[in-house]
Length: 367
Image (cartoon, rainbow, N blue to C red; front, side, top):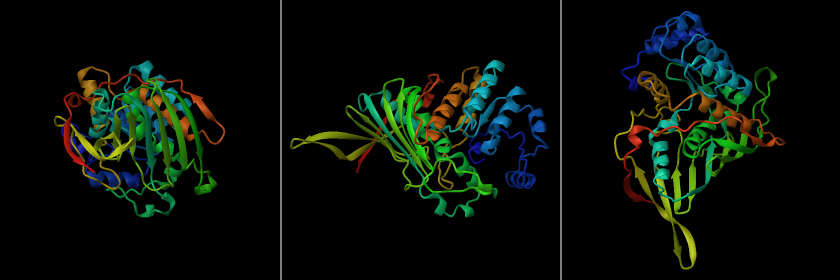
């Protein structure tokens, strides 16, 4: 809601939750109208539905909205089963209704600066990517004290049942797909390494996953996700003429830096100094840090609404949502025996944001 507040042209038509106590608390805190049912919400014919339900409900809720002819922006994952994701894609395509899924941080400042640096060949030809999404030793974190601004508890059971790769791999996958094209092959392994048992004896999803991703452009990336290793959200892109680095994917204005290599006394070394790359013009509205993130979560809905108003394709579309889901599921479900998987879906090429088309500004050198 703090993100939606950055869009003065957007009005919330209504909210619905099957938990009526939560619906009342949300409506009262944010002062938005409450619907009496999902059908009531659909009947209000909003320009866009934000599907922020629990992961197990994403498919059914999105399907109901699409079948009613309403565009949908879904929280990640689009669905927890590939067949369901494909069905949503098919319904959206056949009915000509917009469909997209989170995350939308690829539209944010850091991702767009990084992409522009690649287009301008700041590090020459990119060869290899290392991406980390480690979130610390989650089960010992005080997550029982974590609450949303309106008081909703953090859904730890959902997080562990859905899994770290399916929940979080998209934060860098969406960046990499925008920059390097679709993933054609995945070689992955995953495991539940914490010995967890969820409520009612359900098995936990993998708490560790690592994948080598092969992109259409020829670039190869290694992506690691876990809720075990210390917090590390770093991204490094290794090119012929240097390294591009980002320290955090959960902040829209995380610094993007370039590091050069030098020959010193017959040795090749990576410079201890970096140069920060900055946008050449104003970018987008920012949202202050709240909890672990500093992201404007409304960039995706804003893009879809703008595309609809302008009669153009959205940078976030059903093809990308399906492709992202297929790749994330391939990583998550790899286990210790699946290994190499061929990806069937493809994401179309998306244009950079208009404000990312100017020149980059160079900041001061930093260590």
